[in-house]
Image 1 (cartoon, rainbow, N blue to C red):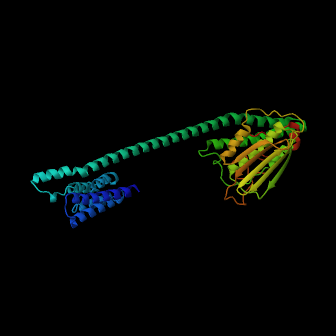
Image 2 (cartoon, rainbow, N blue to C red):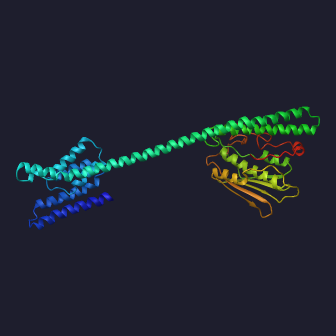
Image 3 (cartoon, rainbow, N blue to C red):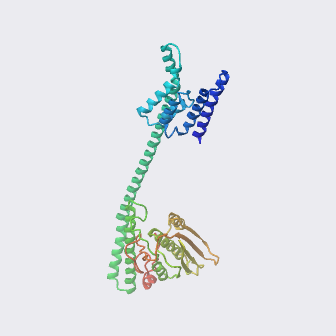
Length: 413
């Protein structure tokens, strides 16, 4: 739009100046005057193409100098310096137009004077070209500075990513060296206690402690693998969709003395492993809070597949006697769980229910290309390669007698 406006304005101004000058000099409006006016108009309209074909515009203005010195000439030489490729023939066309703008073939007088006037008048074409060169070099300088800043920013991001990777590797090493050692000692001592104990109840409790320790070691190895991965969370495992399986987690809570009901609505659909693990942790955290703050309460776990969403509802009644179980402090609780849900573009709501209990609601996206041919999730890993049943993985059911005797309650990490 700007080029068109400039072209029309320059063409109309050049043509009108040609006609008004002839009228002011009381010269007849002959065909030469009208040809000069048309040449001015054509030269101005040619400026529409000054960005796409600046050389052609300059050469056209040089040809139009046979009829009149086009007012578009200086604009054309400026455009070739700004939008041209800087080739020698481009500058040759600028020199030709600058020399012809003064129309030396119509001049009269000594040859030296004609040459001097031609050289002076050629500044009308050379000066805009020099201005265009300055603007083009300034634009290239700014572009180079912008590219350099962008490159420095990318390098800074790469350095930060490298620092994060190194820190992840260091944390993985610390966890492997310290936590794994302590848990391994616990597993070994529980196994030794199971061997030497004479009481059947003690042996069952020791076996349960050993199983829980083995599961903790397995989950810890998975977490260390994720920390050592160069990709984002969850990419250290296969991205094959999995089907959420809460039977083991529900059985574990039942074995610990909580009445839990599991209801599934709709056809179960496979979800990405990270979504599956997030849904599992939502239910696990909700059940853990029931163990801690509402002993004796009845719990309902409802899983609904509606469209492209996986909806989870964990609702419990008011506490029915007993005291709160002390499971330690310092966990992130619902706030950390909400952040985890938001990372997978889901939503989480938690608060008191109308019946006087508490409820946790979560909505998580289901992969749009997930089909019915999914598999059962192994929650011990991010979408492990083999399905797990109750008795294996973090959601595994603990034997009821052992749980009742030892008071084992699983807590989400």
